[in-house]
Image 1 (cartoon, helix red, strand yellow):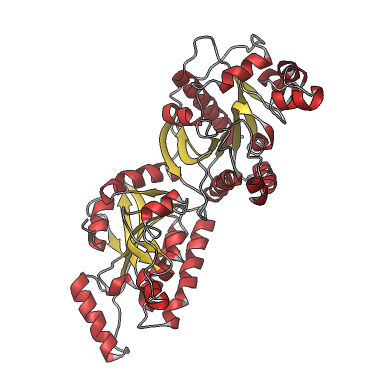
Image 2: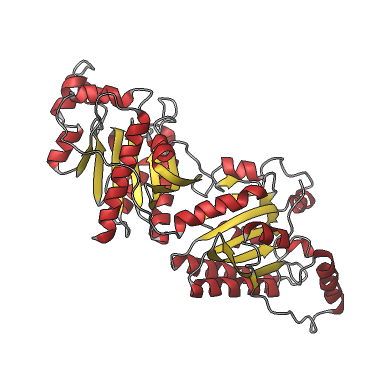
Length: 474
């Protein structure tokens, strides 16, 4: 696959004719003559005066700052001048209040400059974290190859991290490993695809798909809310079903979950993957979304991926906390969807700090600095459900429920058998109407006879959006 140059990427992503360079000419007069000759040759070969180009442009009309690595300039290595360019550009973007779009292709620190260049990775990281602290988006596209200090600094600090298919991405250069250890580095570990599978990066995307993805992401992160288009469900909710009947409905295979809410109720969605720390649990969905016109961060328990043999583990809750952190940092509302038969109960989960992760999720949800809505969508069993419940507004679907244990478990504890499960569901007041009367739930979305997954999902999204609109103006 042909790899795009720095100039080619700018032309691909930015609106035509909108790029304005922020780079000043570089003075190489005081450098060692041999190194100066290398820089001149690199400039002739690459068509750039350094390994990094920075500037300002428009992305579908939105102002953005850009940092673009050019691998043909001394393997994209970062010397002092390149580092200073990055720091200056990020600081300027922060002052102007605009997002940063970055793309890497680098072997890391420039060895010709040694430690004085190496320590500039700290300055780059500090500038980026100050940009993030200002609530401004930082997106990055990792290209082939991205290794060493670049991956260990500005390559790993973005809100959304995507990569080029087949790209070599890693901290340790495989050639260095082979020379040091006398054997080849294991194959397929430092690939974009493996990192996505491991939850270290969010997606693998072809260069041609970049403009669409960046446009969608910026639309969610910086564009204003849009008017309501979906109709809220109104009407009284009565006890037309027993708690046990409602439980059976929420356990039905065709019951709509968070996937359907995003599919039918979100105007645009960008999924994130994993904890960024080498963990990924498919039981949790984390995404930027626009629910009926309202941009937000969504964290939701995916009913389709939780099974008896693969329940929701501690990594899923760590993914949820990533979503909470992003919502706080980017000043976006948070919407959580609860739909779980329960968190994992196993030695592995205990060693993975399942109790601590439940506690941390509850504490984070209880102290969010942005508007929050939680949705009791279906099954709400145990601490895994409680972890996503605290919010400014709690919505429940009519047939949703919340209990410390499955009714069968409660029956086993109280009666020593499973035959009293339906009775326990009633006695423990686990249903949506009981929760409303107790003040745990603030609003119920009706589920009329003949409801369809699509209609249900749209109604849930419409109610979430309506509650977010109300919270914004409070």
